[in-house]
Length: 445
Ligand code: ATP
Image (cartoon, rainbow, N blue to C red; front, side, top):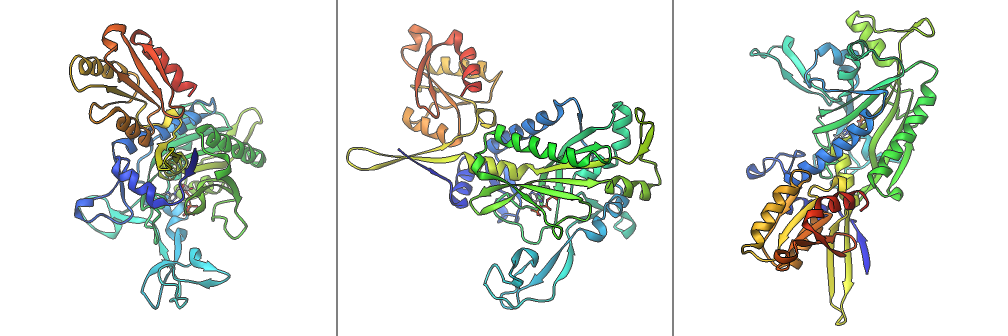
């Protein structure tokens, strides 16, 4: 058997649409550029990814959660540097009028239009990436608010609230999942770069002087998180930011990159933000944000180590990583291709499929009853149409780890056949023992 992994994004985009993972937003109106909707399976997958991240963070003794509002006081974005500095250099191609980012299209100092290949472009202009809107019924400049371009600021402005209410001592972290918005000049590559996206960010507050050590610790913790998720290690790497790439707030930065079908790209940023944010908010708000370290009897502004990953980007990586085609040839030489989404069971949108062998009673009754019982613990699909072989393939294509078949013997022996997605082995299991069997198999898949 030959195994082929994903090498073009189009194959995945088509599977995602066909099988209900991801749809183009507002498709019946011709779609809205760079916006995507998660279908029933995509929504499950995304929830599983978020849960894995949130639990990995908050089950630690030194991290708590937060859910801050998207709209914030406009001065937050002055303090954070986003009003003045959150912009990308924008150029227009003189030949085809394409508008794109200068920095990403520059190779050896020459800017090349990614659409037509021309090298004559306009002078670059700075374009602010924040979406503006108005608060209240009157559209005046004084009512301008921004859709947050990152979730981090919600954490910084709540540093004091969280530390006090939760009686936290440094070092500790705050983790948050939420939507962010950036008016990206060149969105694209499916859900990789969009204008509305979800971030999973954690800010870890430490004593100055211990920041470099914590930075190294977090690099290790985050690397292990991706391995634990089951991403292939040869598809992951670290990439250090050189001095010129460092963001205005960063003392040091590393990206975790994943090799997508369109190349190595950032999945997560790990940054040493120093005390930049807290000192800016202290200055702009006039509120003291210093921490009093009782043990050392000293006051200081904590430094911050940040880990920031895009949830949509991580889901895309999980989808790319899971896709495989198993190609077998029979004696006549004709090829058979089995498409499998090899998700680790915890990420699979459906954990178990219940498939009665016939569309008639009593098999359907038993099947329905089983579905309802199993659905109390797992996401379950029920399918009674088409041949059993076809139904197995449908489940393989959406990554369902286990298929439970109710057959004619079930009526007498009160047992079902459970088929394993990867090994394709089948076990006969008593219905009375089915839950325990499934629970064990999903853990030791
Ligand atoms: P990039 O260089 O790709 O624009 P960034 O370095 O500006 O990203 P950060 O500000 O560090 O990104 O954001 C943290 C994470 O949020 C990124 O690693 C990425 O996973 C995600 N992210 C950022 N921008 C987008 C976007 N437009 N669409 C989807 N995810 C995004």
